[in-house]
Length: 357
Image (cartoon, rainbow, N blue to C red; front, side, top):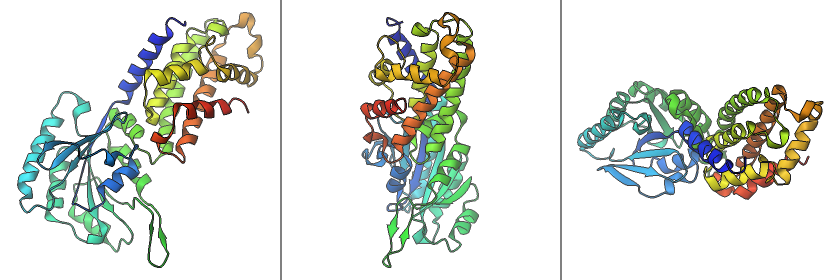
């Protein structure tokens, strides 16, 4: 097994990255509308601070960040009097992207941002919504939301081709009287985006966003269920526990899939350390040994199976327990930290705690 583990890890990473895919989002709005604040509130890694991005049209920039399965197309120029020319260029670009034979290169949805404090919808915003809606689902986001006063309904009536209009306040604000306006609408925005983004881009969007740990957990639970089913099939054949060769690729793949969906950088170095610390027998650290001993306690009779073989039910249950512990670890770490603040050592240390209790 030791000589094959490198290949197993490489294959697991390739599959996890393919299953995660990429998602592309176009975001438009006038200067000062709060696009950068919104982007950094929704997505991992202070995405909007990446820089100006690469020009793809005169008024549109492509923004990417290593390790995050997201490309943003930041469209400006809504203030220009000659916005018709800007929009013709933009529509030509969008048409070219969405006619590509590779769905990963399509622009999968658009967000149009309108500042609530402006209390008006510009002709450029109405026209842009009509144009983009012909090519992709559009969400209109009313930014800096604090007092609706019927503005959302007005926007909804004017931009009828949008899938929905959502009021969002991305940052907590303290008013002069000391009243605090809490962030609102971010969860609703993520949930709506998950409804309208194509199926092949859902994992990528879940990984890129930082708002909903629940969405990450839900996708990861599905990965655990699939791994548990595969483990049950492997466990139906008598396998010595010390070198359960059929289970290792399944569990490595599960770890890779969960890591990818949570949005962590999935590289061979990280996954190799994680695997050697948790799964592979001879090279396992205290974490791996404790997993085996403590998990077996959860299943009476597992240690006395004839010949040390793993029954199908036990193999499945062990895989579920292991996968859910990893999900719990990542969820806990992301609760109060941005993904960029969490190290490999943090993950291993927190996972270890869960098996020493």
